[in-house]
Image (tube, rainbow over the protein chains, first blue to last red):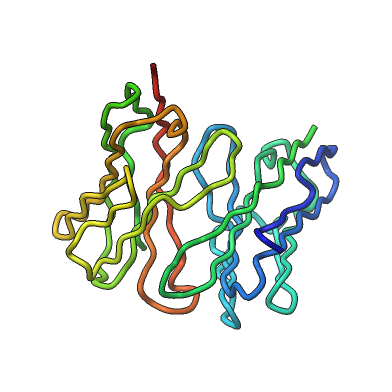
Length: 114
Length: 117
């Protein structure tokens, strides 16, 4: 695709339910990030995939959060037993070259937990 | 771990004027990259400008330029001839020159720029 695609763009769920957020990076990009952004706030790093390296999971806030990247392409962020404090916009970004370091961001998935 | 600090939560500039957004970072590395990203209200982040640490010359992209002071670990963004479309959140970011997941991009907390008539 032309850019990073995220789905769903909006998700409303009830507390305690599980949700899955999907990210389709730009084809050929080896780096993939997930960030969380609360209303009007900065970016909170969640997880980073880079090629075949073990992912950096140091930003995942609890064991309710997990992410995988299949075949070095599509990534899914899963939040189990959602809580109201999980409400935020979840941003995915991918990068092509190590040298340039530029990231291309999707439009995000807005999660609302009632 | 590297840290990126943006000490100005909000800034305001009049249309056609110049504004400078501040960013400092902390690192023990000599090889790294610095970035400014813009997030307009539509929320999609886009790259504004990039600086390689090994380059002494400050990067410039049209109305956007940086003042990179490596010894001071400072990386400010100057926006000249500000336009209404420049209104956005601006994030400073650092990336190590190492490979693999050590090259994680670290963002500052952002500066919200308002542009007034």
